[in-house]
Image 1 (cartoon, helix red, strand yellow):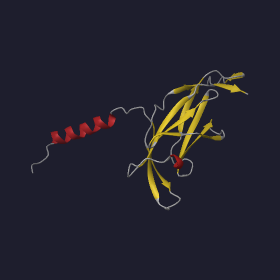
Image 2: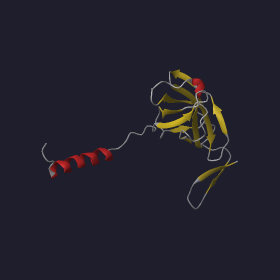
Image 3: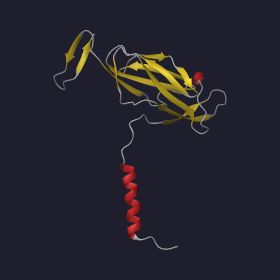
Image 4: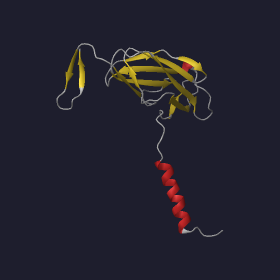
Length: 163
């Protein structure tokens, strides 16, 4: 084998930098998680992804259908509907409510979302009863008019509904 010249090394290194600096798509990242299976007591990795642009801003009181894909990471087998659940909370410290989910294809789930008002909502998924936070929550931003009085904070100009 011949020697690698300095020019070849610079070219290969430069290509690596160009590839790593390329902009990424704005779809949701795929979360690879380990969950606990209650029957076999084994740990299995799961691939979970939102099938919509997570940067989308939704409208208050308008129903949308959010879709997600969940599969076994190693085998690629779809997660069954009885093994996955979805929960929604409003704001950082809001109460969590369970959302219904329908399996529309093997491993693909549709979750209806009708935000009652503007604000930040957080959607969490759990596979086989995994602890909260095992799959990163997905932020859902909602725009609309707040009902009731509105307070504007002079220090930063933010707006908050007063209930």
